[in-house]
Length: 300
Length: 259
Image 1: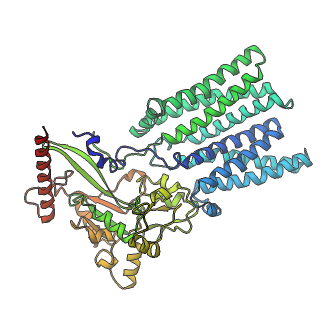
Image 2 (image 1 turned 30 degrees about the vertical axis):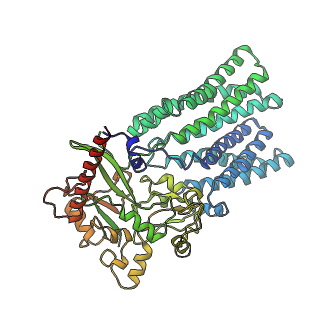
Image 3 (image 1 turned 180 degrees about the horizontal axis):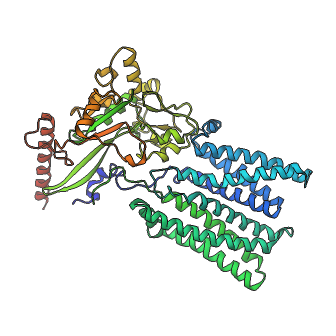
């Protein structure tokens, strides 16, 4: 059989048969969407963790990550940014529409809550807005998983565990940032934050493993996606970024801190940076390794 | 009423006329093609052959693109045609991602550099900007030539039968591999073809119920698309088949001389 190099004219026509990867949401301006998706998880997660520790600065940072960073990335990604307001009109079936409503609701509720926390701390109104903003923060951290999960043509995404993975990853990032803030803020219970961070790190690693195992078993295309991540073009990013930086290094540092008592602030900050980078790269890998089921099933 | 198309794989001569007709009809930008001809190599005893599948938007009854579009720019009409209102599209590309058939394209600036980049637009392009403007930053796809259908129906014509009410790709197909008509009418040509030749849809397991059906009556001993002995499909297939054989012979002779 002739090789493709001798038949370059054909290559462009074959892309629908080889199980090609999606590119719109990860290449060129798609990078902005990856960052936006990650900011949703991180900001929402940080806000929830900050509610847990009653850490006002964490809530403010979480709000900034969602409202300013995530919002700006989404805005810059759109082909027609001036029409973004139209995106709220189809929440009946569109997860992007629901997501925008979650982000807007969170932004409004959390803003009022932060003002109330500064002016009327402990008031019933503040508690009410904390609950409302907390619910929307959870929705912001979760919805991107449903956005991807809805895509039937990509078996790698079409798994019910994906939204769970996204929200756990977001909360893990939130705990990481809280630990980092705890070094400079005495009001945060650093030991408790570290303990929770360890628990969520273990849950996250288990979820990633289960997710990849389920995707590989789903069908041939799902297996291709997993192999692309583990052995193919994404192997370096996955093993060095997601596994080494995102899991093993924070694991070593956090357990050193557990047994040695207190770890040096430099080590803790390193663990936090590694955790954040790992979370970002995990989402990068999830978006980048999304392969479509071939349009026409060719006989082997 | 549900407009649909039947593609006879055995008749398709992979001439790309449907792609060109669509480009002309809709003044498509340089790197945009609504219908596509996907091709792959099949090994035959005599050597390598090419097998093709003409694909386009399937105008699904349960269209994932309609479902996921946050702005409702992608809509499904009562007659089953799925179309994009470019004035509403915000360019989020969710529909591009969600289409399991990968038949949508986001029109970015790099896909629309002009037919001759660096030179003034051609008269064709200038006319296109007036008659069929394409908005950068939005999504595009085949719309079954709904303008032709609507105009034709208003004139009392019948889509699929009268040329002025029929999609351009169907009109131009010299092999008559494309048939257009009402899938809800059991007596229409498309319904009869589907029934007679066991028409199938791509990826029915997704539950999208496409309005584009494929038939493969084995007329040309598919998937090679080379007309068999005694085919009554049309002389053009035999002609192309002969041309292919001649081209192969010339190619092989050329390689022999090189050695």
